[in-house]
Image (cartoon, rainbow, N blue to C red; front, side, top):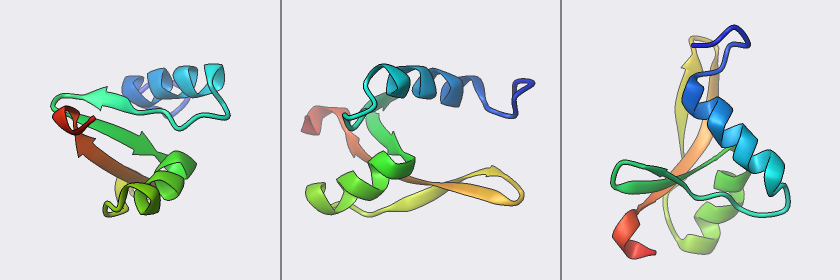
Length: 72
């Protein structure tokens, strides 16, 4: 975790999201494209996939959804 409380992965995701604020960002993680936060909340019903969450710390979780890379 970095000094701002974010993991390096989430810092990178937020840099991409800042470049494309009006787009849903598909972030490649291994064999999946994952969406986080508001992107996940918006994308899950459109794609017909489950909306879950990922713990950021003991008191906070962010919405998450994902699809296998080969489904894109």
